[in-house]
Image (cartoon, rainbow over all chains, first blue to last red; front, side, top):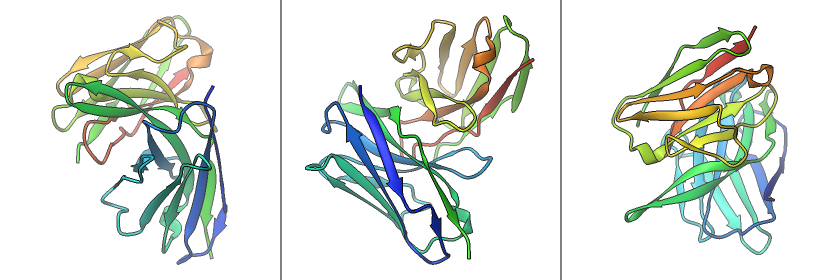
Length: 124
Length: 108
């Protein structure tokens, strides 16, 4: 059974950088889109972006200038970095596994396994 | 960017009743690329349905998805107290892979 275990700093000051890591326990690391999603307090879900085992990334345009994702296949981990944080970045951050569904020439990825979330607060 | 609009915002129903949740997309979404998630208070989301109508592993058949084009529906039959949660739809055909704002289901 695949589990995602995530960690990172929970309290940041404005202008600092957020750094979170997610480790994949069980299952394969290849063939998936490793994804980050966040949820501001009392709000909905926001897709941040995804990365595969080759390091190919896709980021949300709204965060693209501040986001970087990386992957360490030897450790079966992937990470999220978000620079210049503000109070608007206060949220619970989830890592998730994008499971592929191949249709014709394309593969589309839905989120079938989720981490428990890391609460991040940005406050001076 | 594809915008997903969910309705109603809140559903308040009794055990045994049926919940019908709507998700409308701002442009056509392939039926193969629409998912539904359930999120209980303080927990991570859980995949219920993918490709519009395929139930995820371990999801009871009380949950069913349907729809096409821009209109999609999640139906929950024979509501149970444990179904109390917020339900989100997501399109994963194009980036950014957006979510709807959620429908809260309350069990009376």
